[in-house]
Length: 86
Image (cartoon, rainbow, N blue to C red; front, side):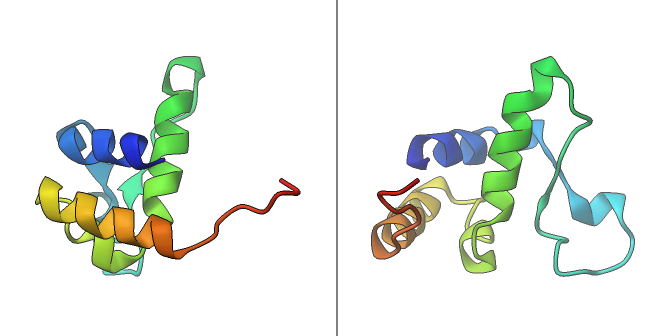
């Protein structure tokens, strides 16, 4: 997950944010806008959904890759997101 999100941040220009698409300021304005789904874009959809589930404080660091990596690593190490049953 760390490497996927790092890839996204280094290539963020290839993705669209919700803020220019929707004129209303919402909680999802810092989220990435998922593309229409087809076989070639399926991986982008999963990556975008993963990014959109990050806390806003981490997403706001996406312009600085080094700070983003540090914050993401701390976030991932602090939480247990999967159980042994999954």
